[in-house]
Length: 95
Length: 489
Image 1 (cartoon, rainbow over the protein chains, first blue to last red):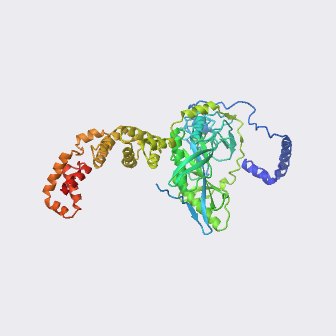
Image 2: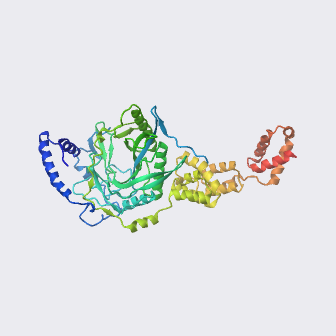
């Protein structure tokens, strides 16, 4: 698999990372060499191996269904760049 | 019973089109606290008051799963006759939106907790099975409020992190009516199970609607469009109607349909493309590194299976078998658990068929008019059963019963008390009735002669006189019989 410049720009856009046009070429080159390295792994036959999503052979540990949190609006809103008494305030997003 | 034929097609000049619909229903899980945090899920709280550091995605916070939400998802899966997966995985679905503080939604992608199942619909043209593709658990997002400020959007994260079950149907639905029946059936099942309250006004149940069209002789599915977040059945039906016709219009003009996400504008009654969702399907899912895979013990599943209440399909069959109801009556009476409980209480104490008729007629009409739920009915099941018995035994006529019913609604009194105190008992003693009728006939000798001479319409006049002189209490059947007998002689 290799990435072209368009793909790099697309991924950057999805991740909300601004990429300098001047840097796109070198980024493409870098990322492709990383992919090449990863692709070596494909040489291994993994047909009969289950995908590993965690290295711990455990299941999720659940908690009881109890209300134990909340009512900290001030703390929650504290770091918001824009807010009023009750809400986060963000630029208009409406269609 | 003759069955209607399915008939929902769109006729174009180039052919007849059928409409293919699949639904992704988002059902809020009934639980005290959120899927991965201990904040309350209660509806209607002050903005941002039910938000923890996890729900607002502060750095370093770790999600811990709520065991109740897992159980609720399993129960719902069992209620949908679905396969429960002993192994499932939580993934991150990445996108940016103001009401999604994490920048990703924790959801399940490749390994959902519930696999394929099915739901049965009762349509006028017969029963129809709708396939369920999967059910998975995911977090709800916050709420954006656009109408409080002309230039800003306000964000309330109270809903952020509440557990949702996304129930994905197969593209088996073919008309707005089937969508209506499907949503209602899902809601009934979840209410029976107590896994979702199904309250669409409060947003506990919403759906994304996938619509495509194809000519009736085509085998291949057409290109679909997804209409996002429709929150009432009526709007779903309107959106489908509009969207299907739009697509047929394009095809008729020889144009192509592009796969896209659209929104339904309820004011203009149209769907339109959502530009912000152009990249929406590029979610870059990957397993959430904060969460281990969810492994379920078979024992837990078996225990939950045993704990399930009787579900609507089974209850319906039982009502038909045990109470002699027809399919329509049984359907209506099992549509809500509370209605079926009320009916069973009444049926145990009175005539089963008559109880069904009166419930679906006068009782429902009254509740509807008053905007009441059956659990708030001014008439208790016990009193209602007594009323039914009084009709059945002939103690009061159906007409008087309606009067008693009205008084019961107002006073909440027991029908026996009302009938006694107002002296409303039906006159069913043949001897007394005969005596009264003889009197009336004697007084109206001229009319009797006319009747005998062939003016049979006068029969109604005599019945009216009997009712008048008995204060409406004469037993109508008996009155008819005696009148006929005496007029013959």
